[in-house]
Every structure is written in C-alpha cells, then in structure tokens.
Image (cartoon, rainbow, N blue to C red; front, side, top):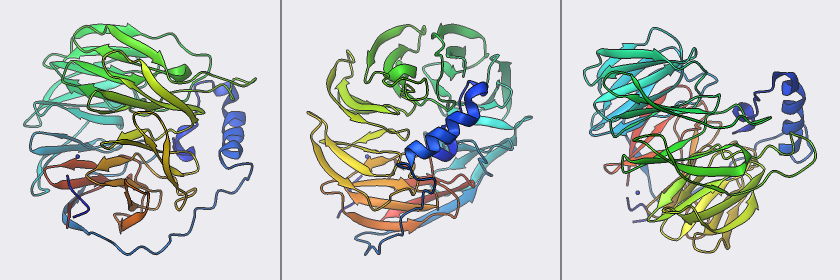
Length: 389
C-alpha cells in the first residue's frame, strides 16, 4: 500500500516599508514569473490514482479571505478559525463541532491550542483565549499586528508580532512571562513566520536575513541561531532573504529554506548545518525518512537527500499553480494548489500518483496526518478528513 502513515506571490510579497510597496510588488511579480507578466498555471496532466483519499467528514468554519489560517490538532479534536471571527473545536473522528464561538473582532491568525487553552489573534493584535469548553478565559493586546500562527505548549502562549517581538503569555491568565526582541530589518516580507514547537520546550523558527534559530519556551532565551543563506544583490528588494516558512524536523535533523536564498539541513541540538544549496521558497520544507522536499516560487517540486543535499528529483508538472505548504507522510508527498486540488507525489521518484479536488478555493496550509486521517483546510474555510485507501 503506497500510503503508510507521518509566499505564494498572491499573499507573500506585502512589505513593511509602505513607501516601496508598489514598486516591490511589481518587481517581485515579474521576477518570480521568470520575466513574464503572465503566470499561466500549468494544465493538469491526467493521473491514474494509485490510491484513494476517501472523504470521512467535512465541515466549514468560514473564509480566511486574504489571511492564512491553519487548523491545529490537539488530543482528539481539531481547532480552526476564520477571518470573520469564528473559532471552533471539531471532533476529530466525526467532524461534529463540539463548540463554536464568535470572537469579538475579525481575526488575523489562529488558532493555537494545547487541547486545554485555545487562542486566536485579532487584526488589532488582541489575543483571545478560551478554555476547552469554549468559555472566554482572557484577552490581552500585544501592541502590534500578528500574522504568525500562535503556539500553545508547556504552559506558555507564544506570540510572534510583526515588529519582531516574541512574547510568552501564561496560558491561564494571559500575563506576560517573557519577551524576546529581534532587531528590525530595513526591509522584510510582511507575512507570517512559522514556528515549530518541539517537546513543549523550544520552538524553531526563521528570521529575516536568511537566519533561523531555536528559542526556549520557558524564558524566551535564544538557544542557537544560524544562517541558512545570506542577502545578495544591490537593491534592498534583491537582498530580501527571509526564512518565513516553518522549519521541518525528522529525527535529529532540522531543515529550513529561505526566500531568494538557500535550503539547508542541520543538527537540531546545535543548529550546525550539514549542507546548503541555492534555492528559494516561501512554502517551506517537509521531510521523509531520507529526503527533504520543497517547492519554489514556480511550483517546481524538488527532493533533496537529507544527509548531503544531493538533488534526488524535480517535478515541474504544477508550474505556476501556486502550491501550498507540503506534507511528507508514509511514501507520498502531499500539497494543495490555488485551485483547490490536492496532489500526491511518490517520495521515491516524484511521480504524481494521485489527485483529488478538495475545494474550489486555494489550499495554502499543509495537510495534517493524524490518527490514520489526512486533514485539509482551504482558504474558503472547508475542512475535511480523508482516509487513504
């Protein structure tokens, strides 16, 4: 059985420097399209499915609109939210909503949950927390816009603000426990920066300037920081080089990729890189047993050998289809696209082995593999669980 169980241009290139916004977007659109002003998505090639993703249940929480919402699984529940302020706990087995609340403001990102406390952040930087019955616990303002998905683990809510502050809040009270301030960059991508929690103790995340690092959840201390790439070029736009996507981890190896930079893998304990190669991606990495996978701005999907960076294969069949964040699970690689399709590739050789239509709206969030199911949320708000057969 082939399925054994583990920033697109449209959303990525909004920049902090408003004075340069129009020129930056225009330049980036042309650059990312290989000099063409028209990015025509590739036609889908016929695929004979080598396995099926059978629908188990589906529900909706409302549209993400222009924001990027991810569902999160904690225990036997899925937590999901929408831009209009819907926040829901969904039974993982049945898809029934255990509870659904209306947050007082429109949301920019969320949710984060540990199964006991669930939080979401409004467009005004207000963090709203709810207990596991859906009752409000607290809300606090963090003084800045938040586009990064919050992390709830180890008794701490980690908020990453757009002004380069990491803020640790007590899960029960919302009282600030710590703050870690990064230096502001002259110019950086105005997007969410993914955070990977490990063992309820640390998070690994990317920074501007091609760097990524590990932060202790107990006190906000920087454990290590390392560059995966370095800015290059003459203009500030050419030198944009941020690690925006959530790093991936398999065993004791962490991999990360930067926009207009490099992809690389290193030791989780120290951050020391084993290898790096020129590459550019805003959708991040995912790892199988021996390979690390990523897709670039043209939606070319590439596999590298984790131990040394040798390119194993590349698939160009989804060119300019604006694929979302990838998931490696079992022997396949899954990712959605801007037209709501979910594509499955063989990890071994990059052959496309299956395809389904989840929705008509884009799928930017990575699929989630849990309990023998694959969970997928579209930007239109449809969440569905599929069983591989």
